[in-house]
Image 1 (cartoon, rainbow, N blue to C red):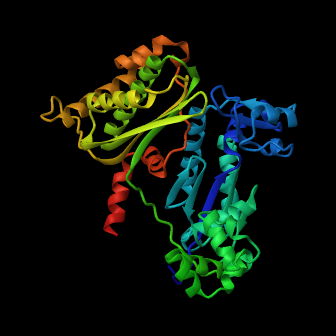
Image 2 (cartoon, helix red, strand yellow):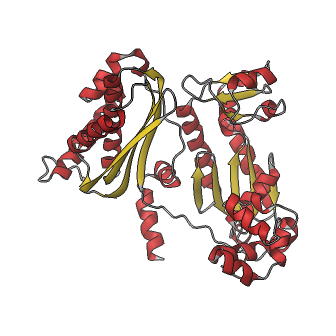
Image 3 (tube, one colour):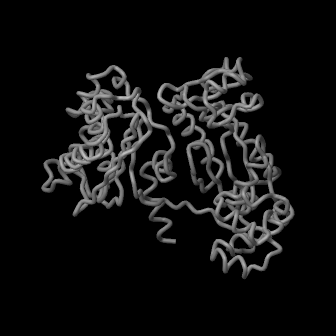
Amino acid sequence: MYSRQPNRILHVDGDTFFASCEVALDASLSGKPVWVGGGRRGDGIVIAANREAKRFGVHTGMACFEAKRVCAHGVLAKPQYDEYRRLSKEMFQIMEQYTPTLVPMSIDEGFLDLTMMSSHIWRDITAESYVNGLRARIQEETGLPVSAGLGRSTWMAKLATSVAKPGFVEVPPDQEREFLAEHHVSELAGVGKRRERSLQILGARTFGDVARLPSTVLKQKFGIWGQQLWLFANGQWNEPLLLEVKDRTTISSSTTLPYDEPDYEAARIFALSESTRMIGQLRREGLQAREMSLIIRFADFNESSAGHRFDHPQFRNSVINGMLEQLLDETMFTFSQPIRQIRICFSNLKPLDTQPTLWGTTDAERWGALDTAMEQLKNQWGCESILTGAQYALRHQDATHANPKPKCPFVPSREMVQKLWGRKLERLDRRHQSN
């Protein structure tokens, strides 16, 4: 992974993203301690807190009532996931104007390739002024503060961002070993507790310790990752930025109901409605499921689970929902507690060709045409214009389901790329394959 010209990889990360989105959406919150609450009603646990709130001891994972106790004048905001997605997309659209290669990693962070900038773009400006110009533009146009780190690998760039928050840090190629020497190995993304303990056994707590170990020891203990870690600790890891769009392997939904549901038939209607939504998404993405699983969490937090493997991959509502009903019977048979949460997962996904051919000759073609027509009607008349029987029953059995709660916007980078560039993704894939 070493070349003559060091790569320059920039990592951009939103600062306290969800809380910053709330401030961007409501200017009156500027300068105030703000945290975003999760849970059923937006007042469960803190899922994001801005810097002003953190100064009072508010942190992610804290109960919202505890946050109010330590910061009485702070503001609790209920999550607005659709708005977070919109602001995220605007942020990435700005970033892609500053680089030939942008790799989104999550809703609020991404990597940019700046390797050739000094040769072809930059003239009388420095990397610092270029990146700070990007940060200022994102702040001005979206209201979102971001931090950034620049190094010659994604590992270095991400670690530099952590050091920079809030702000920007560049680590020159010839100073990486000195920069890393006193940093703890746990600061590197991908070093979990198990690897950290294994490194401590070898006497390596900092990257300086790792650099002094023989590379053969790390290779023997960790394989290729150990060699990469040794090169990184010694300032020799020079990694190009590649946009890799991997196929989806699972699609899942985990929903905590608005209140503990004692009516198992009502829970069954919800599960079938959610499954129908997920099956439609599978077909729109040209996929079908070989396996499915169901987990029910009850009010006392006990769980019951069941799964099934189809003989052949499936994409039809009747087959999948028929099996789901059997799994529901299996998971709820011996329980009497109200249902708190329902989790459905389709896995071992396989490709499915559902080109929207009018009155197609195969089931796949006919379902593809149906899905395309339904999407067009929904786009024209709204999401509630077409409902299955289960979805209609769900909307009318309880007012809490009339406006379904938006799903949390954590999505794979593959989906983010697709949303950002649409059809351009296919051309990009072919370009990388040809190289």
